[in-house]
Length: 374
Image (cartoon, rainbow, N blue to C red; front, side, top):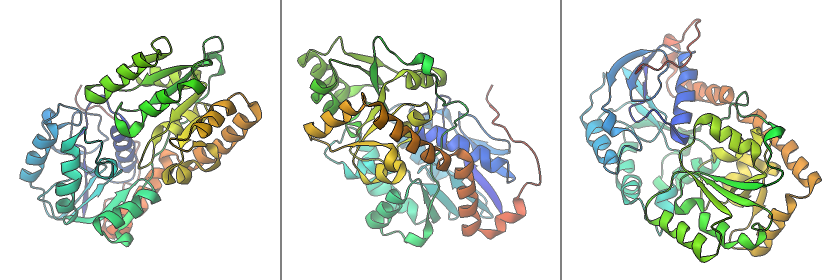
């Protein structure tokens, strides 16, 4: 049995899904002899079976999802290959595959239907795709239970393969902490699930002491709503927009922030909080089940819509003992969510689903990420 990593949806500037995919598949390449379905992003060592068109990559325009669906339906892979896709973008014609569903955010938060094509996928296409899957992987126990409740997929066939953070690059640098003009930061796409508008509504608790840096992609209706609220509340001199950042720029921003604010309405895991903790930066997060699962006592939790809770969370940033307690707890979180641990969980899950993959295990070799498209 040969393992195929499906990276057809990746593009050269990865965000959350892409980072997860690259790390997981790079780790697998160190342990197994892989075949690859290549996208436009980085690839691990392996035999490229075919190259996907760039036009189907995530983030390649609003119709990329439809082109991706049509392309995936037409694809034919030998039946003696198990296809592993580190995202939910599986192959509709292949009967032997595993996909990774990271969250069901856009299915549950229907009232924020800013991306109807994503809702259509999770509501109508994903249930069909699940019929082709030998197992499902996901990134948290919270989402594992959600997948079972939502689609009725057998719980014993859903495996948790969590996210990780590279503490060799995401690390503290106290010299970058902004002492004279401190700031709070938010990371992630500027869309309703990330709840930027609530942070602006709670500006009375932070605007006198901090700036707010929005480090994310912003476009469309929700971005216009953010910009209008910033004007209406007189926050133009307190809010700074930053679009796509390089890897080093993002790390530097984490290192300099007083705190990451991440009050999502719903998440499958939430990578930015563990990245911030790795940079020695405390995190303020919404009090939702997945953050309780992932962060434990490392997070400062806010009850959404509760001004008193927001006030307490912001005030806690000036209490050095509270900040140090959360950061100390954060070290326990970071020791758990490493990419090495993630790949270990991935390997165990794959072998549990298909023990014959032992036959394709590598004996030795160092398989660093190689960009096949230079």
